[in-house]
Image 1 (cartoon, rainbow over the protein chains, first blue to last red):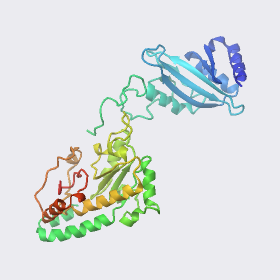
Image 2: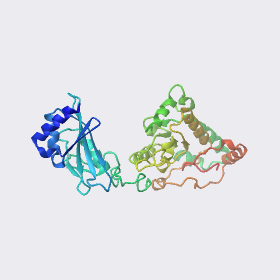
Image 3: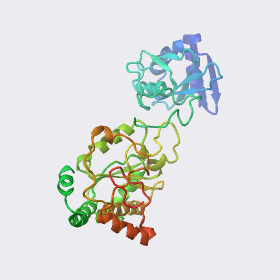
Image 4: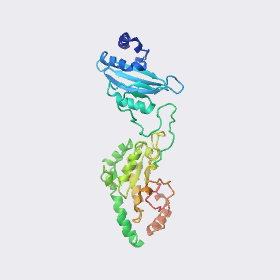
Length: 159
Length: 215
């Protein structure tokens, strides 16, 4: 089942070898690590040529303050015609957590990128409306980072 | 609020006791809740209103969607920090006399959610009259809470609930530190009754509007 996905990846590599940094195939899930400059190009190719027309999920992950690169952004693509799933991963370091937005490719990425910005602090360049979506707008900090305390910094008071 | 207060303030206790009884009976028998179902406790609130445990037997005939037409606000569900100012605004829009029932563990104390996003107890936002524990509380427990609130309402007096000025109403009061006013005839009756049967003492923190009648 994953042979088809590997074929797609070979075709993408044939287009431009620098687009695929790493491929991992684990328990029937294929993950392709993409350098952050070329994520939009890879997404366009995946959507138009190989039929991955649905962005099922866009989420961030924090590997921990000691790791470098610290943040990753995962793009879960799904093909409604062939029922294939593939994951694209972009690794970002802590001092420069910026990546280009994919809202031009899939409109649904709009709110998912807002959520990733809200909870991790990853900045999506070119995003039409990058602001907090889940936490209150005057919230200080990014809540799902590993060094943010569970209980927050101060208890709620109305004053 | 203003009219009854100014009219009855000068009346002797003999008259206001009878008035209290009638007015309180009227208020407790038609407590119309405002829908404030936030999360899972709202489902049990719906159960309480449905046919098996029927809340309108106790006077809660309709749940008004507009807070301006409601008497009691049943906060059912966890209140997030983003929702807390909205909750306060809805509470402010309710006209006096108003009461608050905090339903469920999350509204009472944050419940299982001890984190950055959930307010640890809705009494940090609005003054609460009755707390109902449970996750979620059974419908019968919510009915018991309404009954408890009705008993509490019977103890009030028409002379309470004067209009408060804006800044004063926004100060949060530590529970248990309300000033105790001089007794009216109703208070003396209640204290005797409370001394006689300890079971009828409600386990509640009095709301800001209520002068402490039994401690």
